[in-house]
Length: 279
Image (cartoon, rainbow, N blue to C red; front, side, top):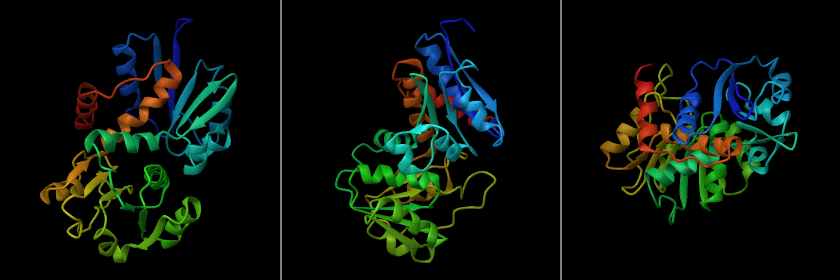
């Protein structure tokens, strides 16, 4: 690599499935930036030492995927967003310090803004399925957009209650068995679970209680058109799929590492769609 080139990477275990190199290399080529973006397969045991030596390895920063997002928070200086979500997915070096953030929040909001402009206008009630890291990012984003009431629906109620403890009184833990009650007043439904993902059990819910103006967002992107989105479309509801979140969450990292804010274009989306279709 030439001396003037910058490089970043995605760190995970496993990491072969990551589409991040496809996204960032597209932008590097599109904007004529001399740089590189690579995959790094790193075990949990080796992760702290690997990221402490990022600069020595020739990297200006990194994306972090499973299972390292919580460890990334612990070994870096996180911003308020990463601290609130409880996980970091983006690392960068700033004056020799290892900084971190969580761009899933921007990915979640940016995708909804692009797919359903004005989705948050007058939105009073949202329903979030799941209570893991993606749910925390969604709840953080919904609070930032001043949604008044956020039902967190999870099979283990204690995990949903942990989100209320973390994010405050606008969060309402709700049992899965009473999902219909939460859906009735909701203007937005978000699936943050892995249910419905290729190789996972289906997401078996009836969204009929949702109003005709509701929006349905599924963070799963393999398959791209999930059963949940198909059901929403059959009811005439507006939707946002998980691929858009993947693309929009990559924007800030690229900006931090390579010094310019890239655009999520139809061409980029088509490129990743083709790659997904081939797997």
